[in-house]
Image (cartoon, rainbow, N blue to C red; front, side, top):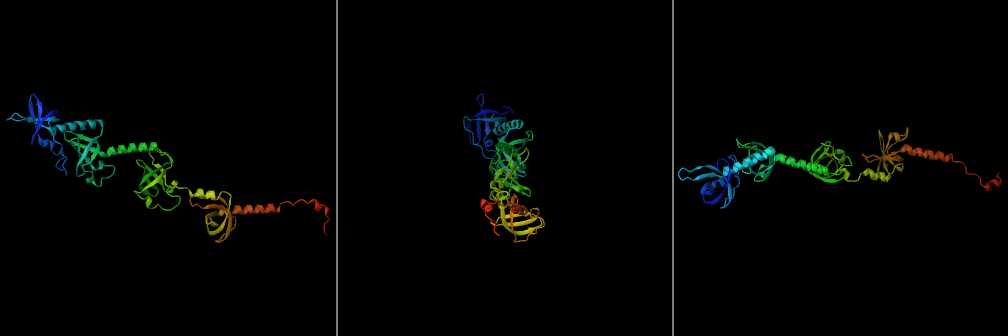
Amino acid sequence: TGKKATWVKVIAVTKDQVLVDIGEKREGVVPLSDFLGDLSDAKSTAPSPKEPLPTAGQRIPVILVGSGKGDGSTYLSYKRAKSEIAWETAAKAYAEKSRVRGQVVSTIKGGFLVDVGGVSAFMPSSLADLRPVREPKRMLHTGVRCYIIELDESKKKMIISRKAVLEEEASKRKDQLLAELRVGEVRIGRVIHVGPAGMLVDIGGAEGFVRSADVSWTTAPAGPAHERGAKLKVKVLSKPQPGEKVPLGIKQLTPNPADALRKKYPLKSVVRGKVEEAVPTGVKIKLENGAAAFCFTADCGEGIVFKAGDAVSGIVQGVDNTTFHIMVSIAKYDDIQDRKRVAQYLKAPAPLTLGQLLSPEKE
């Protein structure tokens, strides 16, 4: 068989040996310990799982170790054959940049030992997950899919990365999600960062951003529902540009209060109320139904000074989208009233009736 692995048939299994048929009516001997061996190194904190013992008729790979001087027996190694096959498989996967499967055998300083088809590979902690591994023991005896990032068979050294697989899969999920994303749809997201400018939200594979201005219709600060780790509903506001976060909104999930006010207080309608406070920019007004209104100084009328409690009337100019104040003009209302009075004054007298013309004037 030389130094290359070859497959042979098991003849019998004894308490300490496995006898195999090597041809020409000869038998080879494989130590039973080869099937009970530990593939992890001396620094391991846990042994690798035992392998089922072979049975008669089963074919197994072996490598020639030597011949007995006295009894002429041929000694073979199943462990070395399996290791050679594993290294060949690993070298092929490394060259083709294909994934390999392994099982985490133990935790060691700086990472993990992983059994990859019979080869002991090192997986650094930094390459074990997308985020730092805080509880390494939880990964023990778990299956992992990895890429081989370094391989040196002469030094029996192999380094693998599970993180590379996770990043690749995350990238695929992100591309698929962005392709399916529709403007206006609602998604469930998880807050991953909160800052002065807004919130970074994971919407299941892609990152989105909620500007502070799109958190709430009011200026109230964000509450516990908007803290890091919180799950919430968000609305897709637009398609993201390449390399940018998905524009998201929270306040857009509820009606804009300004829209309701615009329906209730249409443009050019007349409202009445009392001055609550005079400020440098104008006057704050409380309308008869309790709604808040505001009149800028330029719309108050030239030379007119208001004080709290003054009754006023105004013409609706619109609704402020930030303060939700109904914007009014007192000056325009007064101007309309003045024009009405002038028009009434200038109104022509009614023409005389026939009775008035025929009847004599009373002295």
